[in-house]
Length: 95
Image: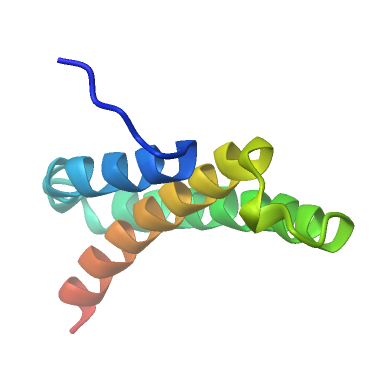
């Protein structure tokens, strides 16, 4: 079944929502040390992609409204969701 999205960013956001339950279940199965490694790796990935996005926005004032940048914006959203999933599990364990 084909699903159509308005943009790559919307598709990435939908993917984030769809995988979060599975992602969190996998993260919950990790040891504390491995969970921390996952969080650190995901945070580093997010920071890199966010840096690309911030540079793009500095160079292209209307990047958020242009289709050619929707993939990068979507990737940033997906990386944020993955980082947030790991952060949520860490917070639960530490709380």
